[in-house]
Length: 327
Image 1 (cartoon, rainbow, N blue to C red):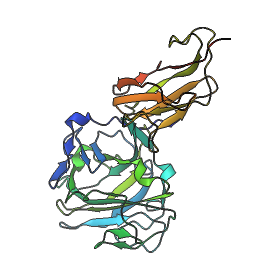
Image 2 (image 1 turned 120 degrees about the vertical axis):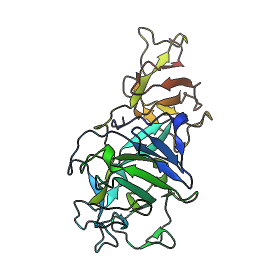
Image 3 (image 1 turned 60 degrees about the vertical axis):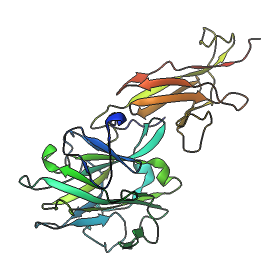
Image 4 (image 1 turned 30 degrees about the vertical axis):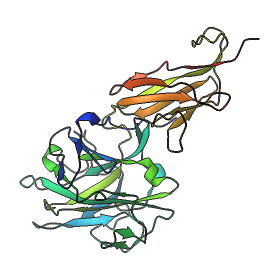
């Protein structure tokens, strides 16, 4: 069973699409998409520095026109404007980052907290790239090739053209309160132990005060608007599709979210295994359309249970009866 994580993404029908112009997150509740990742402004509840679990702090800008950049690593010395304390800049294991699910696709969730002068609150996030590897002390970012220790990015905000994000410090003032949630497809980090995040701020709207801080996602502590889907897989003795008195649940059955609707369980699709009572559950689900299937005894997939999950909804009773004649 997955741990509950945070936040329903804004309805994707209303999202902005990132292009060569800025993705504007200066309005409360605004959100947008960029090359398969989702960027969400939200009204954070108080967290405080030290509460969010920072893995990268970029600081040093104190004058107008200054940019800030850096990436997380255990290596020392650091290359750019990173805070050198391992409390704030360190290696990040993929297992540390919460996973949320949208329409059957798993995303890793990251939190950004910015700091600006109240008189000059706008800040631009101009470059954002992720890398993945098997060691936590990689170094050597090349700004010309956009590689880190020779590795190409597994996600690049600018892969489809020059893109940047416009942020407003006034929406959530104070250090450690958070300003943006970022969702990157979990498949980008598959099979890798460590995640590296490189970012650069200040090219369009200058960094002018303090630091910018990246942390792993909130795990549901700020905006628990995710929902769940659950039910039973059972031996359907009379083949009526209902779990009647005397019919028993089936353990160790695979139930999965058919994200692409092809009727097969693909490698990147989210799945659960039924417990000893035949119960399964998917948590950390954002609002959207879901097709739930189970694997039948002959290895084929059942017909899908198609449903729409509203923000924060817990939709139980999605049961699957596998016909096994009573003896």
